[in-house]
Image 1 (tube, helix red, strand yellow):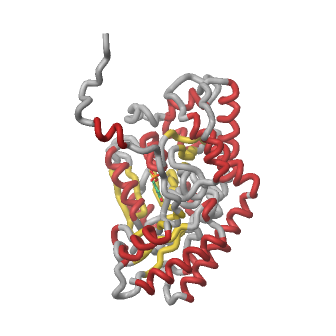
Image 2 (cartoon, rainbow, N blue to C red):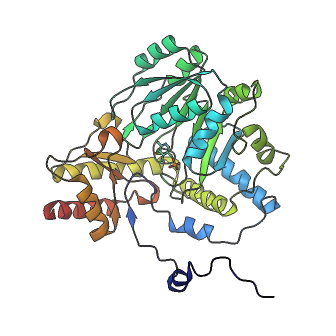
Image 3 (tube, protein in one colour):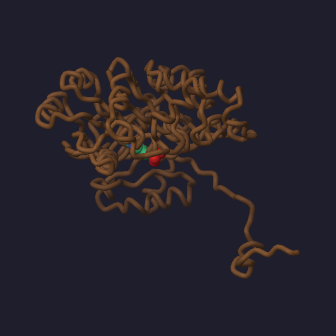
Length: 386
Ligand SMILES: *Cc1c(COP(=O)(O)O)cnc(C)c1O
């Protein structure tokens, strides 16, 4: 008996002409993903082992400990979620929001809106406060909003990748405790690269991703929940509405029981373990300092090209810089030409800032002085040519 594929005629030409995988060598200086450290790519390039293998269980423990270090937290419930940053983001809301809970979200960029969208899907009573994109919330503005809305959860974005602004978090956790509310923070573009002190700041829940400050491919995303957030989970009257992200199930795999939930993306665990190990090897403070130094070099160089930044220096992220597009310049023509002629990716503006800014990322492995030089030279050349 011969086996025949069901529709051989459709793809015959495609099948015989398809080349082996060929990826262009890009320098990714946009809002993410960022290039991975070659050591991380090498770590991924190993055979998978079983997700209940004792050797794998050791890797899991190490990843958890290193994530706690990079986030400066002692939360036992600190794990990588299988998926990109948005999966970890959804995990925070899926586990703590019950229908009718008031969730207050600070919207000063694109990702605040995504939090609102997710909280709505878990049937929260969503309220929001807004700021122009590129600005941040003050403590007194947050206090007034907590007084008015009395939320169960306040969600803020520490590092808004759409605007390049850093939301200060000192004092926000105390404020949330005063109003008996959980503090949820997006640290996707800050983890490993910008100072974060989750425990000192009394953050109850946070999430991040692997492909921005951690020099790793996308697909394994740090997630943490403190005692107060776990209590809210334990006191739920309704089941968590998302099976895949349900921490009350996942904690049996990450905890003592080691009970199968879903097959861990084993090779992504190798990758994030190596990525976190590299942060440990460099030293967290040294990594923060490197990001700040290279960002300042970029800002100075942009000024030399006659370009200015969108965010006030005090609140500027070292990982993501929004640069004002000069009048009369076609923003997209510049980014397209940078990619085509120089193999360099920078981002276009998003939402309110579409066409008004470029977004330049210096994240993780890519935060290097030589990359700043290469980008400034290429940007100067492209602007002269168009
Ligand atoms: C990138 C990003 C996310 C989403 O992460 P994905 O890995 O794209 O799912 C969430 N929040 C912020 C601030 C981001 O920059």
